[in-house]
Image (cartoon, rainbow, N blue to C red; front, side, top):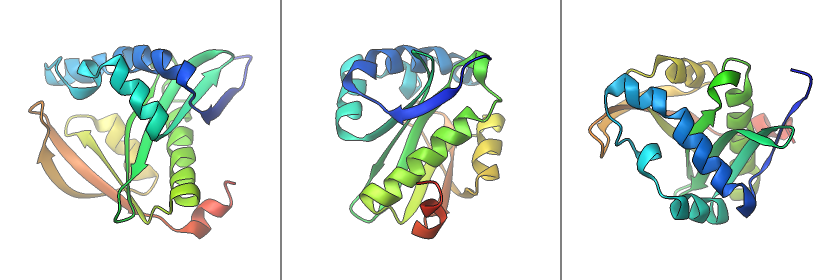
Length: 167
């Protein structure tokens, strides 16, 4: 590759790049389900900007290019929701998604006191499900998404000790 991928907190200036990357990355998911109304494809730029301002959002960069992103937030019960994990299609399979996920988990524990993590993936999204299971998530149920896609719900307990080493 020639350059190192860096991961950092997203800034307001990153919102448009995240929005564009998300649209690109989720095309394959939409094709998998024959549904181009999935949430990441219909989310507005203003909504992405609001998430960058309010939530725990990280980006992966290759040089100046935003090539990955993940978002998380913590509910009052201490459960962190992680979502919209995406990596540019040409760079998938190099561990960037796992790095983004671990970075978000660590920040959600250290800065927001997360006690456990929740995320979901479409039932046909085998690559995503493999990643989540490989990093410790377990299936806890299923749900029907607002877009009609059957989602697999996954969770993992958070322990501060597990994330202290990443700091």
